[in-house]
Amino acid sequence: MFIKILVLVILVCHSTVLVQCNREILRDKSVIHFKFFDNSLTLYSEDITARDISYKVSVIDVHQNKVIDNNVKIFVLNDKENQFIPQAPTGRLYNHDEFVMFSIQVANVEATSYLIEYYGASGARELLATSHIVPFQKTATDGLTTSPVVDSKGNIIGSINVNYLVIRPISGFDADADQTIDIKSGAMMGHRGTGSGRRTDLKENILENTIEAFNYACRHGADMIELDIQLSSDKIPIIHHNFETQLYVRENKGTDLAKQNTAIKDLAYSQMKKISTVESKNFDYEDNQPFETLKDVLERMDANCGINFEIKYPQTYSDGHWEAEKPLELNEYIDIIVKALYDNIGNRSGIITSFHVDLCSMIQLKQNKLRVALLTSGDVKHWDPKAKPLYDPRGTTIPLGAYFAEGMGLDGMSILAKDLLADKTLIPFVKSRKQHVYVWGDQINSRQVIDQLVNNGADGLIFNK
Image: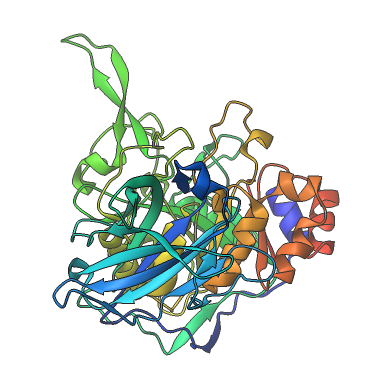
C-alpha cells in the first residue's frame, strides 16, 4: 500500500528549498511565558466575585526593588486576538473561559519577580488586590505556581494558578541561521520510515526507526521520513519512539528470559548498543538495529530524502500524572538536539514537530534553521477510548492549537486524520490561521482518503505503511 499510494499521489521533488531567514531568536535574554486557563483565578469573597475584574502583569527588578518597563505582551487564543501585542495599561478583563498567554523578555531570570494587580473593571479604576510571583531559579523551566491574592489590608481573598515557562537562549552556540530550510507542499512522509513496529511482510524484516527503514521508504517513493528523537542518559540524541524499551533479562541462574521495562533516559548509548531488546532480533543486520544516533542517521540516510524530526518529551495528563518520568531539564534537552541538528543536517529538507506544546514554543524561539509544527491527536477518544487527555488544551483542541501556532509563528499543525475526516471544516480553518496542515494516522489507507485530504487542502501526508 505504501509504495503504490506514493507513486499515485507524489506531488513534489526531493530538492531542498532554502528561504531567507526572517525569524529572530533569543540571544542574550530569556523569555517568560505565563499561561492562564482552566479557572486560574479563585476568589473567596462574594463581593469580589460579583464584580468584573481586570488583571495586569508587571515586572519587578529585585535588585532595584521597583517595577520596570519590560514591554509585557499578551496573546489571547481566540479568533481576533491571536497575536502577541503590548499589554493594555489597564490590563485585561478576567474571563475564566479564556486561554491567555503573557510573554516577558528578561535579562536576568533569577533577579526578576512579577506583580499581578487586580482592578475593578467598571466605574472608577480601583486597585482591589495583588499577587506576587518570586524569581525563577536556574533549574526552573515549566510548571504551575499558586500565589495568594491579597487585598490592601493584607487579607488573603483568593488564589491564582499561573502556568509558567522559562525559555533560555542556547548557551555558547550561535543558532541564528542565514537561511531557513523549507519543505514543499504535498510531501509524502514515511512514519518511522516504513511504519510502526516491524514489517514482517517484507523480506528484509524492517524495524521501525532504523536507517534501513528510512532508506527503504526513500527508495520506494517517500519525499520525507518521520522519526522520533530522545536523549540517552549520557545526553546523546538517539532515535526511539517509546519512553521505555523492553529488555530481555535472565531469571536467576536459569536459561529462561523475562521482559523488563527500562526507561530510555536511564540507558547510556553504549548500553543500548549491547543489550538485547524485545524489539531487536539476532538476525537483524547493521542498518536494521534500534537506537541509532541522530548523527548517524543524518550521515547514512539518503541525502535526497527529507526528515520530519519529532522531538519526544513527557507531558502532563489532565489528572496530574505524567506520561513518563521527566529526563533532562527541558532547555538543556532541546539545546543538545538543536546543536546536533545544526552540526549534521546540512541543507537537507526537514521540519521539527512535537506533541509537547511548550517545547514547540521553546524551539521556535531558540533556532531558526528549521520550521516548527505542533503535533496533535485532537480528541484522544477518537483513537483510544481509554486514553487520558493531556492537561494543556492547546495540544488536544484543534482550534486552540491553531490559534497558538499562528500566534507563535509556527509553520503549521500535524493532525490526526480521524479528526479531519470527521470534520471537513478543520483543514480550511487551520489554513485560515496561516498554518500548513500535515496529516498522520492509520486512516490514511486508501486512494479515496488521500484524495479527500489533499482536495480539502492537506499540505503533507504521513503514512504508516
